Amino acid sequence: LRDILTVNRRKIRLHMKQTGLKKGTSNKSGVIKYDPPQGQQIEDKKLYLKGFGVAVFKLFESSERLPYSRNDPYSQAGIMVKTTNATLDNQLFGFDNDPNAHFFFGEVRCKGIAEKIRDKKQILIVRTDRTGLNWRNPYCKEVESEIKKILDKHITRKRKQNEAKITKSTMPEERV
Image 1 (spheres, helix red, strand yellow):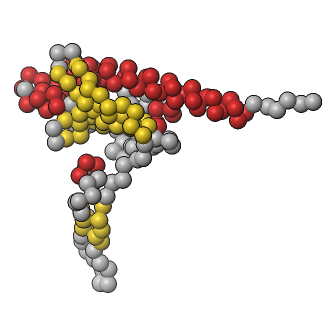
Image 2 (cartoon, helix red, strand yellow):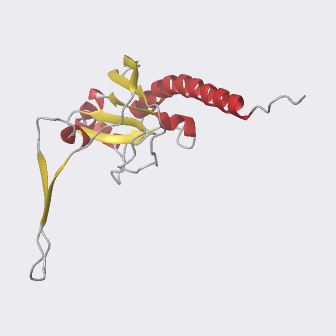
Image 3 (cartoon, one colour):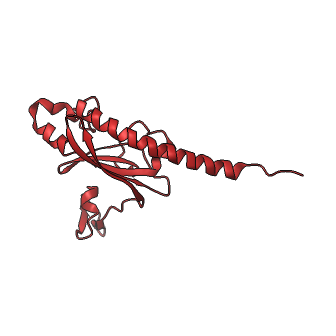
């Protein structure tokens, strides 16, 4: 729903009808909207997946740490894995517990996932419980491998920046 709720031209109203209302109470209604986190775009590239075609990857860096929890639809940090008309997963690709990774968000658009799902032989690309992608699938492994390389570079840089800030602020003054 994030893609739908971020379009300014759309007005999405949520109507909540309550059953068993007491006299004098009313139903609730309101406009819902998703405001994506603010950040600077640091990557916009095509990923050439060996034997699997092309994916488009965009990565942003926020100036503040964003909330992230694996399998939480409200997480703002992480890479949204998308295919034609669907968002399938939100991942930090093994950096889930690294607080420096929580400054990064973005998306990877994998047209190939929709094509693989339509191919009856590749049905196991999505987990059977539909909680995301099956990261053991060769296509998903290739996507993961390419994104991990890019994320590792930026998370390492962010870690060094944060360590430098901590070192500067905690250095004891010289005593005379």
